[in-house]
Image (cartoon, rainbow, N blue to C red; front, side, top):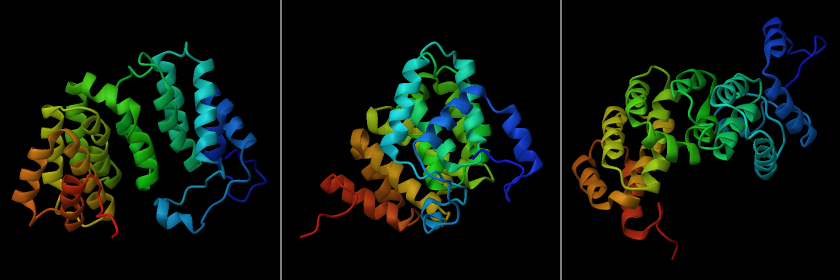
Length: 259
């Protein structure tokens, strides 16, 4: 949200951030503002989305349209410049800017994705709640870059799973959902289950739902291994993860079809 000194929420730090904002960030934010209304905050969606950042009332299809066209016009953007743009958006005032990072990652070229994944360690400090974390940590980017840069990602995922920041602990799991759903990869499965083991005693829904998600994702290509793992750990895994994973293995869905 672009603020001016007359706005009640204006702060000196906000003003300084706006002065240093990446120029590409400016152009994307202008497009978001053009196709949305006035930013809102503290609505009934706060509890559901898991954060209290301001949001622009703009549809997901419109965000995807903006992203697709903008990335098409900036195919020559280098990995370094692309990373700098994404970092600027992550630090933005609104949840919409943060979510846009995930959309842009999905529309980027393979060459533009070749930045150091340690950037996620910084980005996750500015994200809050499942909607922001999942929008940035799932999708096409993870299906190409995590398997393709596994040595660096493996160390990063282990670090995230031990973090005091619950957003990073969730990310240590959900970052692996898309790669596991896309293809069979025993190395990725091993780290996913390792992180699940480390976090399965936590009660926060951010973690319990993430565990269910990654186990169900892995069931696509590792069904027997997931069935064995759940059977051996059903007393210590979150109940929702056990229920939804076993249902997925038998019906192909996370919940039983209504009769």
